Length: 83
Image (cartoon, rainbow, N blue to C red; front, side, top):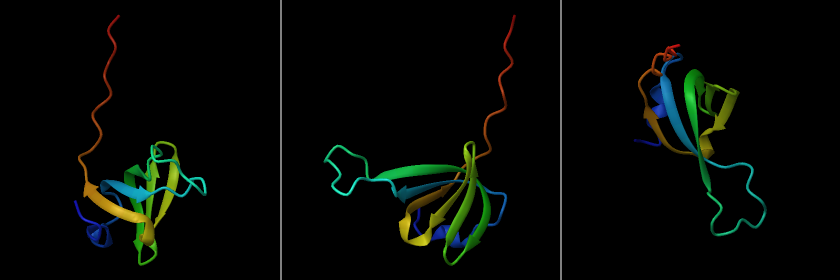
């Protein structure tokens, strides 16, 4: 994983971005996680950060908040339910 490889991504690749949370309280507790992951397809990359389409919608991750990044394989095919 790298914190700078995201600058070389092209739209359409599937990624996970570990980022600093932007919703922490002013005085977070010790057990409050400081990071969160964004998983999805890259829509755009520029010097300001990366735009990722997730299951819940598009997420803009500012460059300053990116901690680690990784390319990931396509999602698994949907399972068919029997019965």
